Length: 256
Image 1 (tube, rainbow, N blue to C red):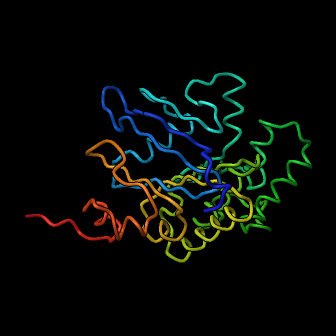
Image 2 (spheres, rainbow, N blue to C red):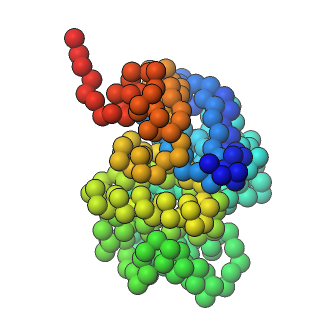
Image 3 (cartoon, rainbow, N blue to C red):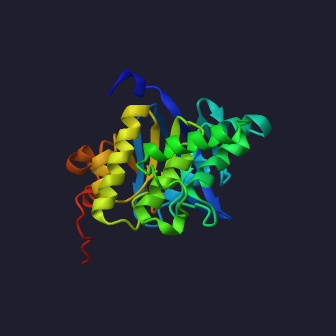
């Protein structure tokens, strides 16, 4: 791992999250290194998406903090919070593109909100982002005219509109066929290597995890915390937790 990847760009400390009186995750702590592809995984209902929502400021935690580039998104207000939000981009599982707008219009939205660039400059940036994700020539199409994989790529392009150092991706391979999913994995690796973007990805798709992840954390709904951390192949072959090995080796759970 390179020196550039050894410093933490995200620090989650003693984070407790839940809804009402129900605690989903309790006192979770970990860090994400600058430039790495970091994956949050685990079984259904373990709190992966809940954790992601807290990390990007959508779900206030019950306790604990999340620091992005040294600034706590949990306690930040006003201009400071807006600056933190501008430092990262998010691709939601559904893509969350506006269906009545062209791809060009979708991608210029963040630029309209956060910059004073003239229209021509905003559109030039949007075209460049679409080119980065392999969608040159699709600028005037609306989302419904695209395949599922193209919609995911367009959503990543919009997440990159403001040149963030961090991209959060929620289940990027969900609903995609294996070939399209592999293409998206290649795109993530290309953006990571060429642009130095730090990725935080929520997924349970094992082929993608092995293809892109530098490091993973595995959440467990029973313990409400992290039960494993490390390189996926290392956890698959050498974890001392049988459930972790079972997950990474895709083995069925046997009942007595």
